[in-house]
Length: 112
Image (cartoon, rainbow, N blue to C red; front, top):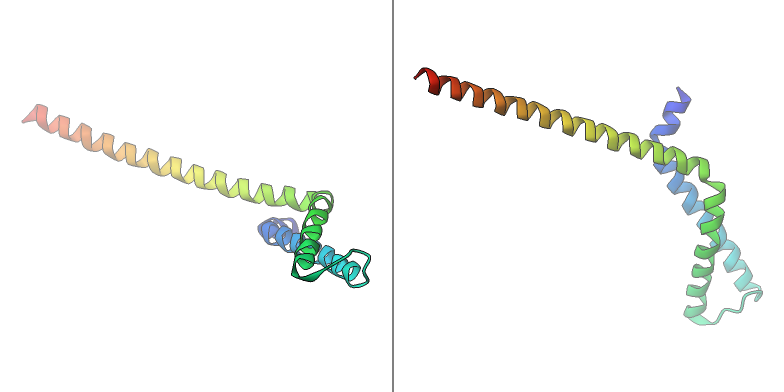
């Protein structure tokens, strides 16, 4: 049962972990800027720290969140497959209704 609940919130879990990693990298970058390990000057320097955090957090997330990304992918593909199957079933039912109506109209035309 816990595996099912893990799959249902996989996208939320991945996104929250991804944001957390970015915020952690941003905190480290801001601390390095505060202690002048990374030179920061004005607003452009803060933007630079945000860019550093984004660039560093991307490969860290790629490595650390591979399982969560796989779970999220399985969740999304399952939903897409379900939607595709429901759509195909609905189209098949509509086609059957149209065929039945067409057959009924042809039968009525031949008898009349």
